[in-house]
Image 1 (cartoon, rainbow, N blue to C red):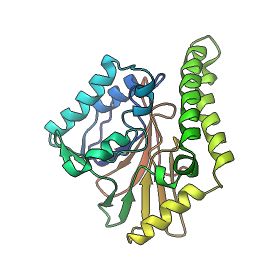
Image 2: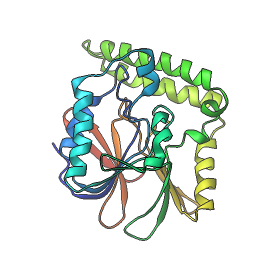
Image 3: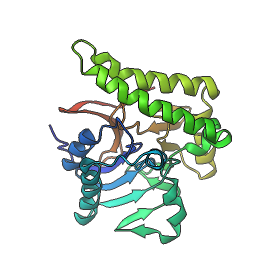
Image 4: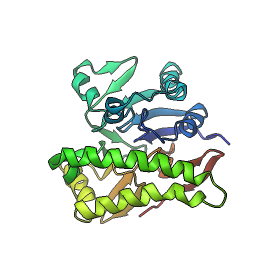
Length: 256
């Protein structure tokens, strides 16, 4: 199954190309069927941390980048907002455009229904990333090899549930080191300063889409475990697409 709807805007984040255990083939299938006016790459697209430790770059990773540039050639506006794992892109933000891809530290997007949204990767609101970089990098090292190991375990008959363990482990670590709701509150505070009624982020590998007290928080998820993309339809409605190796699994309009 491919994406059949021509979306107004699509947001993906945390593809971590170059990291062991990522779902680059699943992402490639998603991109090949994608039709949208604007594609946002919301950070951690290329995993510079992993590539500094070991050079694991596949033909599929190349094909993913080719598919993104093919979107540009097809007339799609592509905006790249780098994260902490691809922070090397932040060093060239003064270029403003690379290969037709717009580079932004963050952005403001007006949805089709007039709502104003703040778009950022979100690592600046992570206590560990900002204050304990060494711990963040060490944790990512463990996460990478744990994820790769669970991928192998999940191939054994009856052990497919092992694919979900890395996501649970990452979520637990975030809850231990960061106060509950701090990430969302930081986004809401920053969005409010920009007169935005919502925020779209990545970083935490946990897809979300909910509205509380008039503020909408949306998270793209990732392409390591959840394989999700946030999409805006021509009317300005947001939803999350859940993808698999077989194609689209479901669409959700609310994820807490």
